[in-house]
Length: 385
Ligand code: GLA
Image 1 (spheres, rainbow, N blue to C red):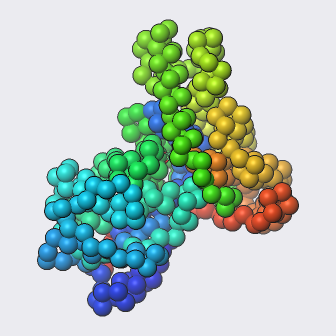
Image 2 (cartoon, protein in one colour; image 1 turned 90 degrees about the vertical axis):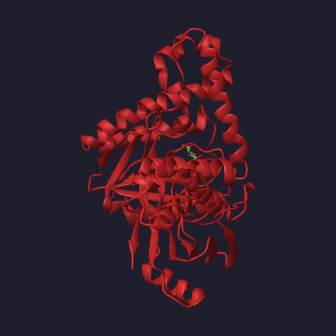
Image 3 (cartoon, rainbow, N blue to C red; image 1 turned 30 degrees about the vertical axis):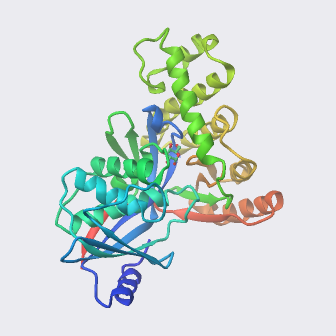
């Protein structure tokens, strides 16, 4: 988490004065429910104690003066003529400012400094953190608060149409609405949420493979299209369905012959993953971590074999983690291909876990992974100074 003093110092150094407020929003790790969000299903992420922070001071004109501390880059934007160009480091700010105004929020010009400690391009949603933090800050400056679901929706539209990544809504929802010491069950059809307490006798380990996700964008879009194709084909026998969320595993198997093998595999991951999320919530509510861990392992197997979004690096991390005594379960988290895995372990196993997983990874892949213990943190907030 970015220390308030660090961003205050950066602001003062850049603008020669103190900021009026700091908005922040966290990255996330998803415990279970992968690739289900864009199929209108369920996900169970936690917000983590790494975040994006934006320090701000209002101006009297319509200018947004933006300084990205980590990139040592600045830009000047005008609230009345925001360019719709897709991509580039200012796209997060341009998207949020344009969409908030379109939704009726009155924004003020501001001097801004952005900092973050969510590692970029590692599958922990640094991009959702930045969108949500920026939305929170720009509205807080004029004394407004955006309801969490609306903030997440505007952030997802920024990601899709300004940043240019066709993601679902999970990352933005958890960044806006995360709750300390809880995982959030999100229904990605109606956006309702339930906070599920995380038992105190478990640790959330995140292992970063440090493998870039080159293939991720095109493969992600291909998976989305395959899921839509499955729905289209199944509608001939299940006319009431709108998304794979509406199909039970037994119904899919009963109509398996309607789908080409690859489409069947993709759909099988989604319908079984939705069932695993709902079962895992029951297990978590009962503090049954053994069952929860088993479901995580099954989720990984399904992502690897049916959805085919794993990689040698992610499989190595997961297999090594699963062998450490004291690990309940382990799986890839996020879109896949590269990025991170998530594992739940007993607190006494943390050191052993780090040593053994790092050693196994080094031996197979040839370099060190980054391993963190993550604490389930609160979602977005703004604080006046
Ligand atoms: C990425 C996307 C999310 C979600 C996951 C896979 O993180 O941003 O919307 O689809 O992949 O579960």
